[in-house]
Length: 208
Length: 262
Ligand SMILES: [Fe+2]
Image 1: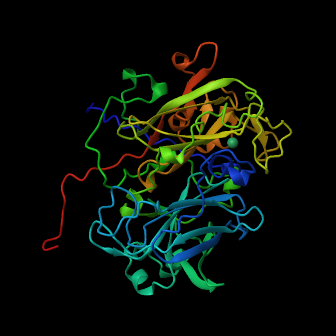
Image 2: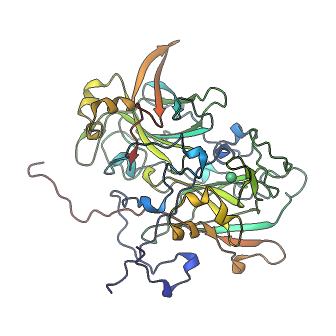
Image 3: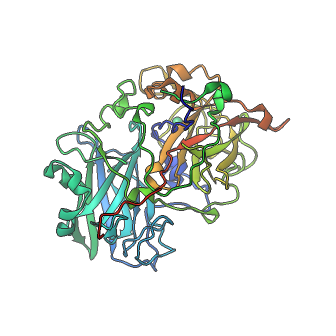
């Protein structure tokens, strides 16, 4: 017998369940408990960059919106830098911009929204340019382990075409499932997305 | 499959001999999907229409996955880890008083410091304070049912609460959840993000739970069951349960390989 390696095993995932709001967004469960709460608004008045609204739904295998889903997003700031010590890239760091938010879907419509800024392009450690993107994590009742996906921007065609992750997707038609569509509404810039859990338009999910 | 030497330690605690390579900030260890529930687990009916059917696309961790949100004590309030007091209106909540404590570790056995742990649960009668929960057991006016803590330098966390009750749910007509507490954990990178549930040693509903039994690996299932920890109990006050959580380990970069002239 060789020496034992003695690694631990990761703790198994379990569904977030239908009442995920209690722990993560108590106001949506219907009560007020914490002095400080996390939210779907990532920006403060001082945040640099172009304000955007991200707006979308998560659809089940019948095309019906999930009305009990929770999304978290994680993104770089307008200079393309993540607010984390492992990001040693050159962009300016903004201590006030955490770059993370969470939102529950509306209990009627299933709509999920975030108020944030469009992230800058990222230079990864190998020096490759990556198109601006937002990392998304999806949990809900019926989802046994959180789903990782990304949102790219429809007005970044050239950067998207060169993006190393989008180019990992074998079928060009599936790349479209990660592109949020830009529009303007009442002077606001809105990027709309749909996450399809199943079906011919199934969103690309990553094993990160 | 399990190369650990079981005779050397209490198997309930899942504690290894210490093994601490230099803390890296490379990619995370590849996730062993065989210890997680599959997306499509028909015994848990809600998963049928909510499970992706395409293969997940494997992504070598980039800076987007290695990094993740950083939290601090400024994000928390002083009562956030005390579920007996953080929603109390005119007294303590009803139920068995318990302390839940443990460490957040990574797969190398190193504690994960300063990471946010969030938890939520039903009250002692199995009722959630949630506008969508209609179970006939009553709401407890003194119990909110959620809290959070930041791990210390060694990855240790603790909180105080009442033991949640089991509750019925619509899967089969007579499905009951074992008593459980939901946990959300961050780690240092977004690829470590994890939501899970903690169960209680000795609960007879554990082997018949359609959600718990989505986990195909018996050892992985057992690791979600917190043992009674009498040594950590507070005499004449609270029992204690111990729950360690393991997040993915992280690789070190020992040698940089760069293309010539790069
Ligand atoms: Fe639950």
